[in-house]
Length: 263
Image (cartoon, helix red, strand yellow):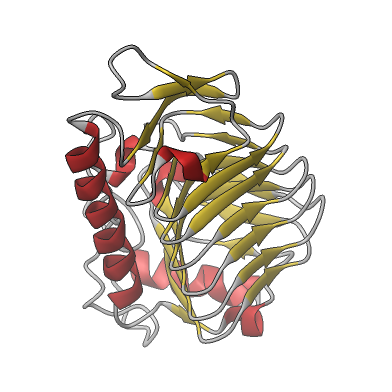
């Protein structure tokens, strides 16, 4: 499907057209174009996935010096599985700090209330993944047979039954309240030195990448959006990301930069 076709389908959906690719049943966005947003909970609630820029279950690693803006959480694994950050425990033992993190680092073996908060946050992450993965009736199916490099993607629900690759620069175009959900049953792989760019006011907090496999962002690439991975997320050397890395196994930062999205 060419970009021009995607724009036609988007305009038909926005005008209430009867295109077979833009149907009810997705839970449409009441505030803009595209599907309803995936709920991550409140960014200020330590029991919500949306309170963390990096959240994982089995491990979080850094090759110094990575740079993380926002809070980091790991559960059920202990703080010993947060590696490469040179953590310094707070006097309360509720959290740790690191020179690589502009925020706090929480782990399952820290003092109350961190264990219960993290258990709840992990449940929130898993629920968000399930929500994103179960949205029916995609607006766009198998776009580019998984190769979306060079595309301009309008708001909508996208689905692939294969690995998704970004071998060339990608643009996500839409308004500040529009929503994108990308579903893939495979991996997400972004080539080195490529960029995901936003235009028209699109915001990273409204872009959800549901990945059944693992997500790999190539060296010196730039990425936008919230990754919900069933397995692992890796940001290779020099990669930057504006969004959240929420993984049901591990997150690896290799001298990478990740910043929580503006709300």
